[in-house]
Structures are given as structure tokens and as C-alpha cells.
Image (cartoon, rainbow, N blue to C red; front, side):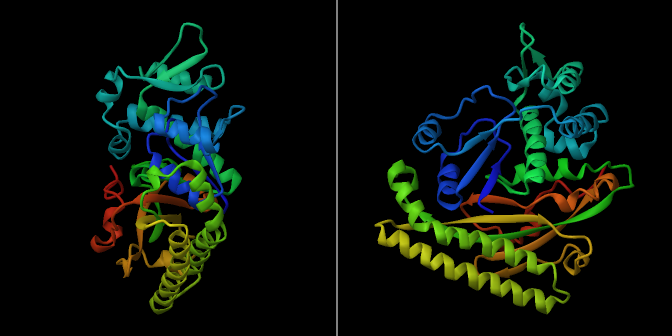
Length: 351
């Protein structure tokens, strides 16, 4: 609960996300395909230098399961033209014709992956045979495969700053086949508000460290309240019980947020509000899963929804082993529209 994997970025352009995470989580791991230094934005580079946050997580050896999962996604999207995958990975011609490439991995470490992309015209190896380069979307997809496997093995949550990235991860985790024989999985989304310093982008690292130390116990309570209360939702059998638990989540988070805002005020900071999501797979034997894609439960600045997504039967045993995902830094809530409708158009149909 004290550590998350940030994905799928191989470089960091979003400084406000990193600063939010610095206040709310002790340890942030950034998944990296290899030890080649990423080209982060200047502001993020300075913040990382001042805080040593986040810490890069680099694969030390080949993981066959990661390579196989990545190649399955690539084959289904580029070889079989599965529309479900194409919508997430970008148009085939656009990716093939892209002239702007990014560092993908060390070629000798992942020979099957490199060979697969080379055959499809989606990657190039340098003259030394050491580095492999590909398009941005391919690197993101590859990095997501690495992140979800590390997340599963380490039993820690992942986090991101865009809903589309979680949708990409869900696609890769579920590996729907689109042949009419897919099973289904229920994915819940709990939307919540949180507070942060209004001028967070102008605060120096020393000031942020003071705020982080002051908020440390409350931020831990905030994360625990989210995860524990979300887990209890799965044990409830009736809509009335679920609504009662939903109100408890609202009350618990509101109380913690109030004290966090007070700390920021005492430190001379004006507060602003952002919104986040906690997303997780509902256990198939849970009464909550039996409710299907229920109408969103809405409260003041809080919402709960579920989406039914296609799932390859081969992946059914693995889905419960994936911890949840946090999505941060939303400036507006999706609650008014019903977050179940806003999760994605990705899973509306299967080709």
C-alpha cells in the first residue's frame, strides 16, 4: 500500500502528477524497459534530482511471460487486425509509417520481442545490435506489459494519470480474443476527491518535503480507507448494504480530507481539489460482480460504477491476481455523467 508502479511512461512529461504522488505515496516505481536514461521534461528532471522520486524499475532478466503477452497483443492487433486492439494501439499504417522512434529495450535481452517487431516493420536495431527502437505506442504497450507483470508479482498497485492508460492495461491483462468465445470480467471504478496545495507547481522540493512529512500519517490512512472499504463492497449481498458501505467510504474519506486540508492551511497553503479513481477487478464470486454493469452510485464528489469487459478464458485464473490501479490528477469529476459511461468506449463491443 506504500508503493505503486507508475506506467506506462518511459519518460515523464507530467510534473504535477509526480508532485501529487510525492505527497500521497512514500514510494513510486517507474517502469523502464532498460537502463537507457529516459528524456524527461526539464521540470521533472530537476524535481527528480532534488527528491530522488520516483525510482526506476528496470528488468534485470528476460521474463518469458511478459514477452509472450506482448507478442500476443501485437499479433492480434497487427497480424489479425482485431479492431478492439487497433482502437487502443493506434492505426496500423500510422504506426508503421511513423518516423519518430523511441528507445524500446536492449535487443539481446528480449530477442523474440525484437524479432517480432522487426518482422512487422515496427522496430529497428542500431548498427551495434545493442539497442532496439520503435514507435511511442509500441514502447508504451511494451512498458505496460512489463508493469502489469511486476505489479502482479510484487502485489502492489499501479498508478497513472490518464484513463486511457488503464484501459490499455486492462486490454493487455484480459487479452480478449474477439472470436465469440470470450468470458467476462467486472471492473469497478471508485471515484474520489483529494486535496493538494493550490500552487503545488511553484513549491520547491524542500517545502514539498515538509508538507509530505506533515501529511504522511493521514495520506497512509487515506490510501488504506480507499482500499479496505473498496474490498468490503465485494462481501455485500444487497443493494442496500452496498449503498450503506458507499456512504461509509464517503464519510471516512471526507474526515481524512478535512484534516489534510487543515494541515496544509497551517503550513500556509491554499488548497485545491482534484479527483482520482481506484480501479480493480471484482472477484467473480462476489455479489457485486453478480450485479453486472449497475447504474453508478453517486454521492457528493464520490461515485462507484462497474464495467463488464471481455476476457479470454485462458486469463480467468490470472485476473484476481492483479492488484488495483490508481488514477490521479483529474481536474473535474466524471460523476455527473456517470463514470460507468466514461470509463471507455473500448469495451462497448468485441469484433
